[in-house]
Length: 188
Image 1: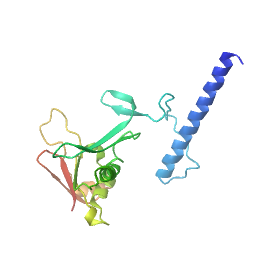
Image 2: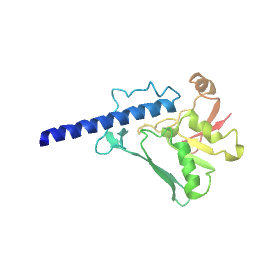
Image 3: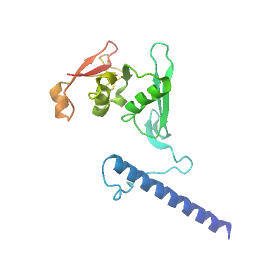
């Protein structure tokens, strides 16, 4: 078979493989969201990287990058890394509790408190730290709820009333700040 035809067949096979992967990702996403996986289809903007299929397109400090999301948990006294992971998730919203589990697995201890940036701030994460069904597993959470502008001298988190959070579909939580300006979320 001529070289040109072999190359075309190889490229078509790779494109078909990429299409199958995108369709599987769409089904997995639908299943995770509680939707019908059978009807799930990839969105037009979904992409596949032929050289590194496990990487994802993400926003980075330098704009849009093809890469991974690295996670690390550091013990505050000795500054030792007690857990680490690399994910395909474009943001940190669903990474807090997996990191807590990794801390337990890799260090053998459950953390008593967590300090996290605003990328981890979600109602699901804050609720998971509370562990209402298992009070002995409660973790004190210090989670930033907003970004601080470099030119601002005020704290990075603006306090919101319980009524505002309920109006946004959130829970009735009280918000306080520690001395570093990080929000400390606790149940009211």
